[in-house]
Image (tube, rainbow, N blue to C red):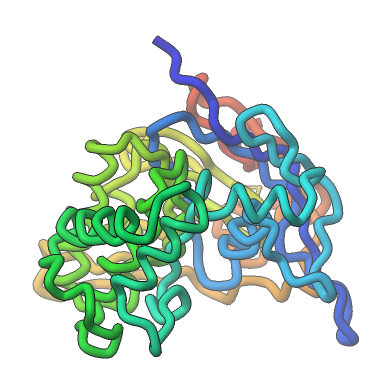
Amino acid sequence: MEQETLLSVKDLTIHYITDDGVMKAVNGISFDLKKGETLGLVGETGAGKTTTALGIMRLVPDPPGKIVSGEILWNGKNLLKVGKLGMRAIRGKEISMIFQDPMTSLNPVMTVGAQLSEVIRIHEKLSRADAAIRAGEMLELVGIPSERMDEYPHQFSGGMKQRVVIAMALACNPLMIIADEPTTALDVTIQAQVLDLMRSLREKFGTATLMITHDLGVVAEICDRVAIIYAGQIVEQGTLEEIYENTKHPYTKGLFASLPDMSSKAHRLHPIKGLMPDPANLPSGCPFHPRCDHARPECARRTPVRTEVTPSHFVNCLLYE
Ligand code: SF4
């Protein structure tokens, strides 16, 4: 049975207008997220992943940021038309966000129990005592004994702090979590534990997740579908299997080739030559053409359109049009 679409981002364009010019951070991004699924938004630093997430949450600082065009349909309503109060009710209750640095979400001078209770009380009509009980339950759920409720964030390790943030994000049982590089700051073993936790909680609560990452290893662990983003555009989108086993776009192929080859002693890396373009000065035509080994003259003149490989797999590259 086809799952219900929860979030539908259509042609989203976000620019930052600065004294140095117009930074074209997000340039016509479209994707859907269905109930309970995990979509990986994957790309290098500066590709526009975080700006897309902030756009959905309506947290793009304006000025200098401007949502130039597009639609963000959430449960049938266009978030770009929802007022400040309406968005405040949606954030945390319907959509939660987890950032790379847990201290973005935690208050250093409040105990973790008080912070969790506060989040619960803002969105749910619970008494102080009931909110505290719920806070304790949420901590247990992420593997932290509820006796640690009265401790402050600095008393927790990095991985434990991120667990507290996950508990806060899930406290009001949101329909969707946006996780922006949630494990990047953690060491590898802890990363695996936090991803395991996120996976088991997703199974338990059925929460949809938009996983923002530069790490194809994280994607393989947790995502159902993948959207590869370059210079503020999605260049390839498909199921996990389609992207990993039937890679089409030269940029996606480059990302895979730049992964360390664990099976080889030499750990050969083939980084993609060149750098992500300056968003204030994007190349004409296909934005990847200055770095692409397959580029031909037409690539600098014409922007590729979305081309269907299968009904669930799309690529924006002239090679496939
Ligand atoms: Fe490379 Fe041309 Fe395809 Fe862009 S459109 S990825 S430059 S082959």
